[in-house]
Length: 377
Image 1 (tube, rainbow, N blue to C red):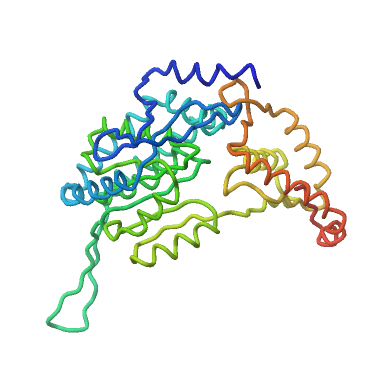
Image 2 (tube, rainbow, N blue to C red):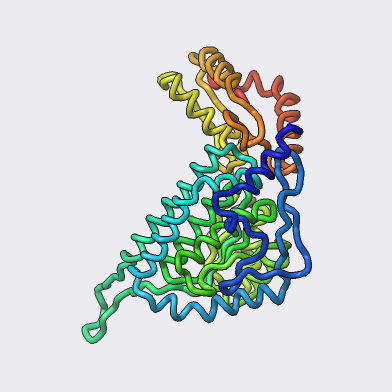
């Protein structure tokens, strides 16, 4: 690990387009700084790789005001014109795929191949919403009075805000922002403090794509100050959050005070179930993807693996052999399949889960066998 310390720094210092590596919030069409900053660290070494300026209350107010002022003109554009700007953004992301992947891996830790896949996954959202914006059809409804006409017309709700997670620091922004922008809503993105660099790189490309000031903004810094500020402000009409169920409950309560439209993607506790008629080779590959993608730091990751008794031994042997082939290491190192976990707290949580599973395994074994399913993890 120690001999990889220069690798991340060297990669960031030798990007094809150095302007993608930003260290300040993007507000009202400009890069703004304040006195305080937060370190971004390389998960594979713990070393700081950037210092990103924090937004204070005044800068957040500036962002909300800019979005509010940008709303009428952005809403007034034809959906096709908004779509053309989104398509330009998507094209620029594709053009700078390698640099964006290096930035993502440097701050989040996942292997470079996974980072590229995530970014292209996000581009798919942008391109889809760019086209879908032109299909916000209304609806005519039969009326109960001969003198009236009833219809539904789709209209943008207003300024939107998105709080995005550290496990998918590019794709989750693309998914949330593209939907809002295609509908005619300016958006303020607050990325995770661990992974702001990907968000700021996307802001750089959004600026080049032609989004006018205030339409797409990124605020960075202390989560509570920024999230509370966005939730308490009545000018912010829609709010999206991806994260834990516990935090989501708190945010829902706060959003209710200003009656915002809210979208929540919370938690995850998925099982992976293999029945005895499954193709074992496909099942093992599916299990590897479900368990080890993003180093398991994924709401879709398999928390339990259940295998029907008749194929249990064969499945376990194949899975064991496949796992032994996986290479663990820094995400920028060639050939790595599993990168480091992003946060020390997640590492500790993993250790607790493993200790709990080992301690409870004997007590659970007889019950599991009676159900003719065996648990692996």
